[in-house]
Length: 426
Image 1: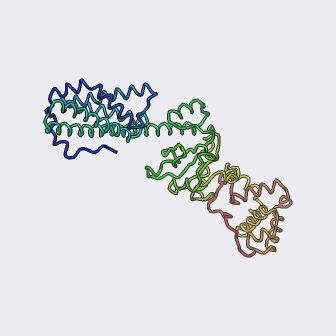
Image 2: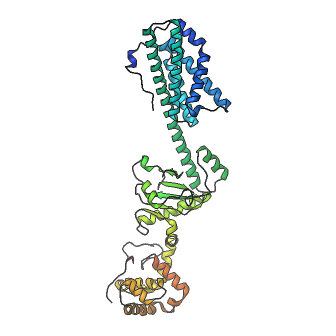
């Protein structure tokens, strides 16, 4: 919280109050003593500054206190001439606090305590000189105004450093993500070095999430908190790498969906970090299948739950060729009966040739199933009993490849699909 200004308008104060030279001379002579008091008081009241075993830190704090008091006394001598110097000094101080990882509250407390101790020392010196109350009041107002101004300068420097640090960290993490998801092998030491500069802990395993892009860019597109995820919103599709997704970084589909504001997303398989590009490949494939309605269109889809579908759609032209060959006997049947025979054959293969089970799944009489199977046996012959042929038929029917498909046209949107049972009477 920024230190509030003293009552009244600072601009109403004289820019260069008349300060007796004897007061400035005494304050300069006692600067080291005052610095001892300020330093001790800051250490006592602000835990973040209490590092008795750190000689380098103690030296830096001491130098900062002495510099601050020197600038303050200089301003007493010439308020108009030292403003820019004080502002620049405390902006740098604020930047340093941010880079050290300390909070702004500690800095504000230190400034307030230091200003108060400086004012007490100045008050005692003014009392020794027998200055009138009006002069002391004016000096006090100047002291508190100075504390307010330097606090604002330090806050501005702190905010600037934090912003730059955040932007630089985001840039390094995006670069790291692109390195991990790029083509070709990546040297482990390169990953470690870049991860260290990005302040990212290198996991053993990871999974890549891809999701639908939007035109919005803001805090709602930040990674889920606590996951340590690397995010690249500029990529197409936007992507996110989740470290250790099956362990400490585990996040449920519901939580991930909430973090992505309900946008459709696909989570790739969990792989060693060095194979993250492979997880990206399958997550992207899954997102494409979601867009086509082959996988659920909404929510978060995990590739681990749909491995067989991803396998079947891994090479669609080859699969279309398989389907055209093994399902060729159905080309001789009219379109309506062809769909009914195909769905019956698929259920028959899935149920292990159990006719009552097929009838229950299709909501038809078992006799209807037996009738259709006799037709299928005439079309396919003894191949229906061959293990290899049955597997080929199951693969072809499982992905609902149209019967007129060819190698050059693996998917025909106008061809019948077998998403739902057909209940037409024979």
